[in-house]
Length: 228
Image (cartoon, rainbow, N blue to C red; front, side, top):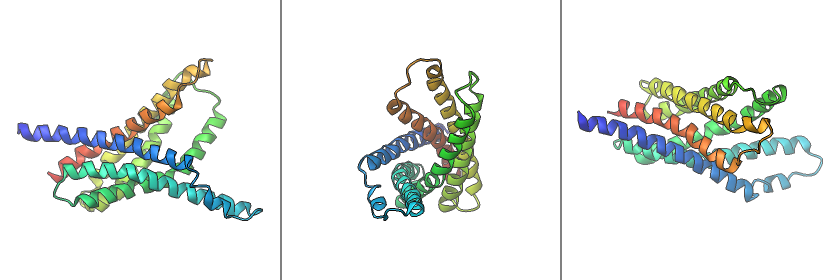
């Protein structure tokens, strides 16, 4: 019994760390891709005056870039899941988790950015009460959890157990999103009072790790339970 409890907590820990580190690496890969200007060359091929085609191409390029780079982080999460469940083929965990993560972020990146911009437009400044930010980013996390949970559950454990992965994913990423919302409010509220803005290059990796780390904790817990 003691060995099983140790394995249980170990699975939760390595899954949280794996998904958290993977999320940070995926975002860093996206940053490097943007800095490399590789995303610009398809846009340079569009003739002048084709504004609609240019916009559509830019959207497709962004989606593909986000999906490919964040999928790298998802592959790390898949690797730690293969440690929890060594019976299932490791390569399948890696590429299926990579697809689930990359596809989820690619689908959500533009809609969530636009929705956040609209909210910011109609809510000038940050309230003293962090409930609004916690609720909004918590909802973002739930939506993220629904999509990645469905893809990951059905592609790895089958339809009989997929609902467990889905519920764990919703709970984990929902809480992770709420934590991110609270972190953003805590970091940027002093700036609304005239204090200097926090360093975004430091804040973003921390919030990314928190979001994916909390989601990974729940996913690791349910995979340990389902597979054993």
